[in-house]
Image (cartoon, rainbow, N blue to C red; front, side, top):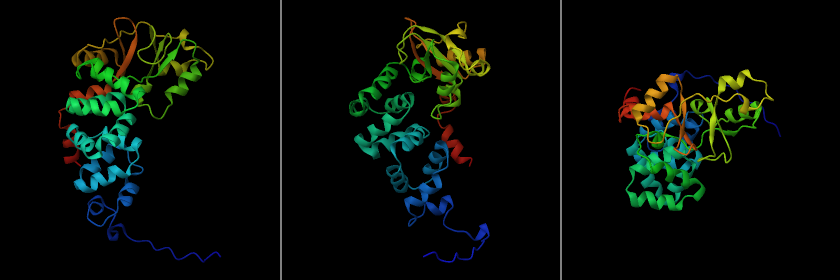
Length: 280
C-alpha cells in the first residue's frame, strides 16, 4: 500500500553534522559512509582523503574497495604509502591490485619493494599482466623505458579513422595517452611489429571516418629510445609540443609510450603529494 509522502524539511548546512571529512574519520562512523562520500571523487582526491584518515580506518576502506578502484587510488599515493598498503593487503590481494594497475605504475611500486617481495607478487600475478611489468623493470626508472606505459593506442595501417577515434574515446585512457595513436605492422601488442609512425588526434578529427590511418601517418616525428634519459624525454616534449611520445627500440619495434604526467611525477619533488595534502 502506498503511504503518504512525509513533509520535506530544509536544514541549514551549518546545522548538518556527521558527513564532513573529519567527522567521517571519527570512531563510530561506518566505512559505508566513507565509500558513499568517495563514490564520485577522482582517484587522486580519494587518495588524498584516505591519507587523512586514521591508519585503521584507511585500511578498512581499502579492503572495501574493489580491485579496479583501489588500483586507481594506490597509483595516486606517495611511494611510502603504496608500500604500506601492499604490506597491509597481503600478497594475494596485493597481486590482484597490481594486475589492475597500469603496468608502469605497478613497476614503479614493485621497484620500491625488496626484490624477494616483488618477485613473490609477480609470480602470483597473471602472466599476461606480469609480463609487461617485468619488461619495464628491466629499465632504469629515470629513462624512457622506465617511464613508459606498455599499453598505448596501437593500430594497424588498415584501421579506419572511425575505429581509431573509437579507441581514443576509451574512458580508461588518460587525455595525454589518447592524444596520439601509433601505427605498426602486426602484431599490435607491445613489443609490436615494425613501427610505421603516429597519427595525432587532431588529424583524426579532420579526416573522413572511412579513411585509413595508413594514409595519414606522421612519419617525420622523432622517436624516443628506451634508454633516453629523463632530461632527454623532457626536452623532447618541450621541443615538439607533445604530451605523448613513442618509445621504439633498436629493431624498430614500438615498446611503449611516455606521457607528460609520468615525466612530471619524476620532475616534481619526491614529497609533492605531501605538500598537496598540507595545502588543502
